[in-house]
Image 1 (cartoon, rainbow, N blue to C red):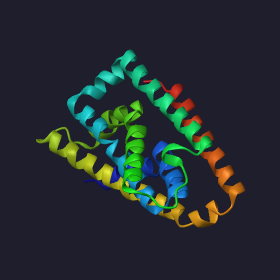
Image 2: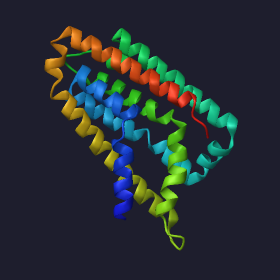
Image 3: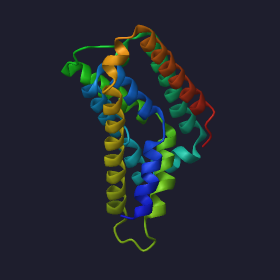
Length: 203
């Protein structure tokens, strides 16, 4: 595994996006346990894209305008739904003092859906991973699994770090209603902006 792959992956993972925003929101509204659940869900959401890239389905998504549009608009709708939930303080972003197992599952599922409905992730795997696989590689699938596994592990670690840092200031935030209201509007605007960005995305 090359240093260039690890550095490039770190830049991609650490860059603010839907997964990071959702993990931060979960941490601030529900605490450290929820932030880890959110990070896990977002990481799980990478798996279908990884499999699609390995099976060549990502190439179909890249070339088929209909398939790309269907997944894209599904993602846009879900991000707008997340924005609405953030404003209403409901769903996976509702403030809870005690996170139950059932709540954690909901956080994981939401994180999974956020990433699985992002068509750019499949195309990213299609364009990104092959650059780090040698032309004469004898075991291409095994190498892709290795690189994908490293990317997922890095995603989980970085998201957990983001989440735990946000959770550490949670008590100060939720004890100030005006700060919490401002944060909710910020998260709602962030999800809406990412939805708009996805809406204008091209294959």
